[in-house]
Image 1 (cartoon, rainbow, N blue to C red):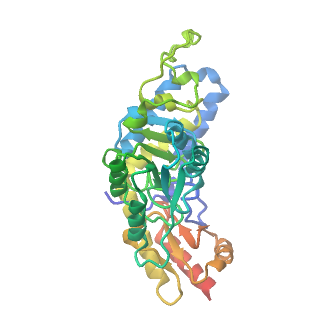
Image 2: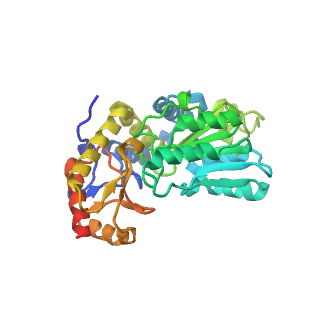
Length: 386
């Protein structure tokens, strides 16, 4: 199904051009309403029933599982990518001589856990830098990541698309190589899941982590971890009462249980049953599933084509190749990267909001954006060049 612009579902100011979903996704009106209703329930706590501590998180688990083509039993509710990554770190011992492979300029939440783990164990943290001056950055980068994986690789971890400019990684090929050497395979889907198709069963990561406040268009501090067989029965590092077997029975909570809730529920964060944020993310996932991820990606691809035409030639601006990036997140290279802060100031003065990431202007549109937004961005970039 094809999508028309969905701006009416959002409360974005009509005189602004918000092209920065990779920074933070805006809330839809329906998601805002779900949050307000959640606050009203909390104002009168008797409206929150013991069953709600379990039924609403289970619905959330099921909807995300549907989005990424996984089993709901594999989905844990986590507050952040770093929390999800810690599940893998906590359950994987490293030793001297082993290495952890990841792309250069990886987002810090997927770096610090491995950096600390390598420092303690004597393993090597092996960054694969972005290729310089390569005609095909994406293809070359993927090749070099595959080459960096060897018999001593214990972990391969990366984002589905690079957070700075949307460069797509070959998740299938990298996953096959990780499995060949027995390495744990961790994928951060925060900058892709919800706007770019992801099939957990096909990619076969040992762990998929995803924050909810960007492309899932949800609230802050609520996201997901999806676990493969190697981690599903692992040890949680947070021991809260909701994760224990029989916790549905509030009358017997002090009958302490040694076992956990089934599947990935043992890794759920404490106080996961937030009466405000859980209904909000439930509603945003409902809408994304209704639109369809492929339709979202197609809509963003059309916006990217508008920008390419509007930029034209002769100004020194260029988008990274459409074949090697996500349509929803891409970098615009500029003639002189040192001028990017000044360019962003000029864009903001025109109420155009994007980000600087690395040496590019990062543009991340969504279904609330219009072709006019892209033309306004192109005009502002060309004016800044002059």
